Image (cartoon, rainbow, N blue to C red; front, side, top):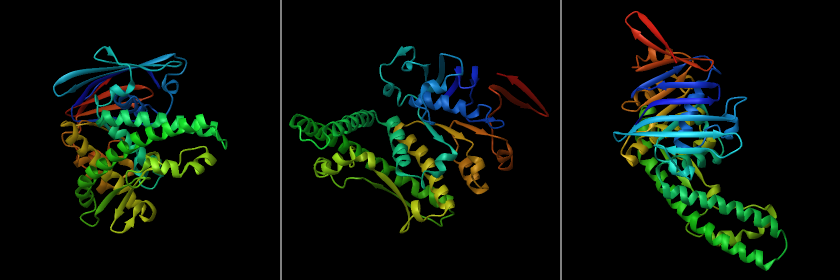
Length: 374
């Protein structure tokens, strides 16, 4: 799988952009706040229907414009695919695949598989459990449409249940209590399926990450990832009943997979709490590299890797390990300069310089550099 081209219209700071990509390594370099990350954001949006920045569509549209467009041409299993996305200020986004509109954004999942790696991801280990749950959900939603269905329904029911808890308050309205029973049974059903799938996902990651982490640490550390479900066993319904009094007081659902976590263990040490910053960052890098390998196995294809200014956050040895892992993976990298690639003698297929919402392709021909303005 690889992206052939990207077209943007009124997206962030781009009025118009048409850019082609090589199957190998593509570099977008330039000073900060020029629009490099905006290009990666548009690709991620085309693959997942969401921005990695967790913003509303209206914030993505260029200032003083009413709508924006994204068009991605890709090749998947030797078949050309086109994704069109129409962002509107006051309406839901419109999405079409090969010119055919889709009804739900979730139908987009799995068309373009992307792995996004930003400096913020280096903190996934030390930050709160919400970020680690988000990591699981974003990846599984690209890989498993059944998981998408279960997660969407689970989240809807959580919202309905929380609203009902507020409506009931401390009263004893029998009709509302009967409704709560119905929501709890449905919540337990979808929740159990989510827990089972997450557990399998972490098990699969764990088989891959062990060797990757040993290599990154020169055989000095052995990393073990553990899934920590909020509910032990298959008794979510019983736990919901048991915790009702607490839920009534807090007006919120306090048990379920929306409170799960993942632990990262080196020996007996939980590095979320007791690991050094170096250990936490290396584990985060191992996690992302494992994600790439797992996606390869599950889709029998290669995802597109988006690296957003990550190299500047890594030391030279980890830079080298990351760059060496990019064989046969289409990679689009943003950076402020090319020093890391030159020092590591890393092969670059295409170089673009980004300046204030314009993109210039740099083509090296002997001692000359020809600039193509995009």
